[in-house]
Length: 471
Image (cartoon, rainbow, N blue to C red; front, side, top):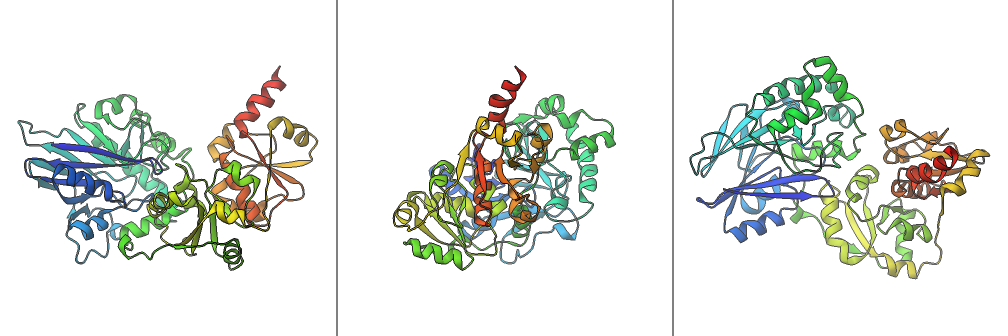
């Protein structure tokens, strides 16, 4: 048997290749949209990709199952559980098999058995894997998708918070309690292969370890320690992070399908400062992907700053309007990687890009913003000369914040501008300084200019100000 692990750090998404070497066939579990790594492995191992298995309709990335079906003719193995709202659509012409609890199918000597595990979503299923190439006649592990993670479980509130389906948080939590009772009955030795790791918004306390066992999770996963259903529900729903706006889009595109990558138009080159300013005047979106430090020293008015790093997809999913054309100011050598990242969350409307260094060199006017230290901000705050805007998550704010700071999470900022207190200069602050820099660019692009960024964020404030005050 062949087992390979693929991890997209920008999405904290894990996918798996499982193959029967005797028959030369492999399948992909929860494939990412960029299927090139799977094709490369298949060629290297001289095996054929015959199936794409999905544990559920994902909310945080575009699944690559339909891309695989188009490119190499794979068969989709997908859930037929849940009600009518959670059935896959537009499957005409795509080889597929609908799966229910207890169903089995074979790939060579490999047996996959279906376990319906609702809670995160109504249609969620897990795949128990048995390798019959030797003497084993029992499952060796389970692909849990977003059901059970290392140290955590899937959140049940996404359908309500991201997709707006009221009442599903409670019903999902109740379903999760029952699913976990089934999970606890599995043998302790079984391995667990989840679809996400630390940093995913599909849970609230995911571990950074790629796999675990049923026995280990039963002992140490916080969610496995409850016998009382109501206490479990209360604990599960408490403290879940805000889901990015794009999650609702992903639910739709993974259910009904999305345009194949081969059909997307080429991205054109934008070569001048004048073109960028005209695009902005016409209401187009322009993202500058430079580091925040570089952006703050000089940028084109109206552009958003989302640095190209592992957080690019998350903040793009919060801040990009999927209905509008998008342009990028980038290092051209990073174009392909940036397109892969954006398309992994369905941002396909990237129309053009420009070399940020060349365009800024010819710019006739640039904006900038000020960064100040906590010690510089302290007297301004004490004298009530400024207003503090905290753009962290709710749980971070609740754990401790600068006195009288207003809280608006950065991802929601563009939609809540009317809540801002603009009668004073605004000191924008997050935990370490990265998110507040993004927030400053959002405010600047929306005409709020009397602002500064707090360098080092709340961590620096605690170290430089609160420690001094406590002495």
